[in-house]
Length: 222
Length: 212
Image (cartoon, rainbow over all chains, first blue to last red):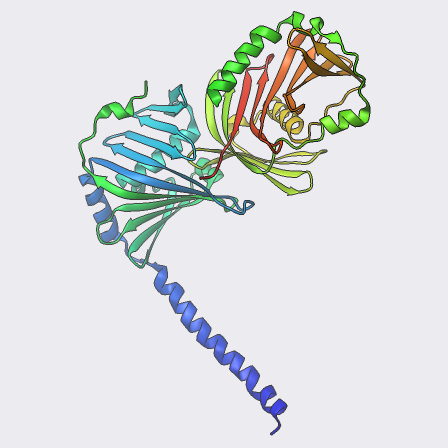
């Protein structure tokens, strides 16, 4: 058998074997890294229990906005505060200073020295966004069956809840929303909002502190 | 920066924005050729970058991130996103075409989008339609001003100390309709831009974000 003949016989076989090995390796990798949870009832129960125990959250956040036409992402950082029931403060510190406060029905923004506020219910977009963010923190989001279709996954040390909007208004904005929980303590670690164009915003919550004493004054901007 | 822009706007308003101001300008001895005008209006001030956008429209204040990317020569993609990352306006702009790729319901107003088209095209391409041009002189401030005349509309172009365009006033008769203020970097790109309409409650300030 000549060298070229042996190559022509064995090379296609080698390619087939390589492809089979690759499919096995990477295919298995995919399934283990993103495994569908068929019965999520225990997870839902635990999320509800943990959410009920949370009275306040204080943490830092890193927000990454990915735009398909940009070579780099837009990264913002800041501090996040939540106090039950409906008090939220997003304090952006980098690359610019900006504060957003949700104080019950009021949406307040501070841009430099300019403070503006409006009634959340007067703006459908902000109202939906507020419901989504609060719902993710409080665990209420899992009760929004009329707005989303849910599917549950697990990967490594986290659970992922994938929300596909069914409500027309939310469908106009988002293709999906992914909520990431730590498997060991059911902490909300990440929130990913994917727009219909494929552009997405991922917010990572770090240095989380729960149920710390929090002065309600930080939710009032004057 | 925003404070400076607002302050400078007020100073400008009270010192040089009165109906009498434009009439007080004297014709300069300087002549200007169309080639020189093209050169003045050619620099790209709004470049591919990220800006913090402060918008004041119809009595409401709003802030977000404005992203500009030149996809091809003179073809721009522009996006306005909220601080929390939600896209509210996505545009594709060429010298001849203005395409709204996405716009939230609240901003989807033909008159508003026409204003945006006009403003964005002006700052992106600095293309001003004019029939005649004249160099003027502000004697009080000892500065040269380029006046471009297009029938009912006159454009007054002001310069910084490096003779780069730093302000454009759009005037009808002696009424200021719109002013655009530029603060430029050493390379001529905009560090900040302010667009203020006098006959429509719309004001836009863009401040370039410097990555850390």
